[in-house]
Image 1 (cartoon, rainbow, N blue to C red):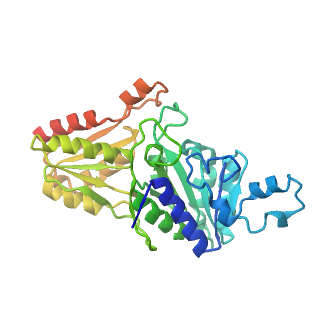
Image 2: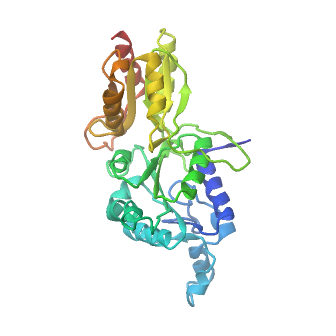
Length: 357
């Protein structure tokens, strides 16, 4: 086992898959340029040393390039700041037999590539009757970090609605490596939401948590559609993803002192979703709380609440509680942002209320 940050675990997964499969390559903005960070959050920094970087070659040759051969065998590709170009290149390359791993600087910019993701990547296999697959991975940093409304969103719920897309949310180093390897090997387009405050990379963030964890040395994958029970409990089931399950764990520790036992479930993947683990937990607790950083209206928690209401309503002893951000843009002010994003205190208070019902 090795101790790794999530950023290093993601890098390790990508590097191992590039060594294993020559069709895998990295593409994005600021991927591995001289003096750059390796994407916005250092995940791809240094990969060009082993796999070659198109922009490094350009610098070394003084931009006196003589054709496509100058870029041959360079599998870390830096692109212009154009998300529509990035997504279009990925869809085309994937349909042609490659396996691109794309790096968005911020997940908010997924909106710039909606047609390619929703109408092309997601539907191509179905529309071609299996003639084409689109095995591409789109990495999307998400979550509020004092950057304002256009760089702070949690967009998972926009994409769980789209048949053909898989949506995953790894939140530990172990899961980050195993799920990234699984995503790269999948023949479907996979969106990977990564919370900025969990990377633990060389770029420091205000409010960053230490998510360093044990990662096996050997090859392994983490299957999609299997939730992780982060903490067993018997009174309340709390389902939370990414940064929120860390906050839910802190709340559970406080509630345990008051005699309230909370079971914490991290879904890990939202499409496919592991409903069975949630229902098995409800058979024991009878109470459900859902916590996510996304807005209350239409968040992935609404889908989970609807499913439980349709398929397991008889297990519930109380109404389902959702703890989420209010339906407003994420404020730039740190004070207001802290008010909007679910806090440990808010989760604790809502759980106390639920426990009394």
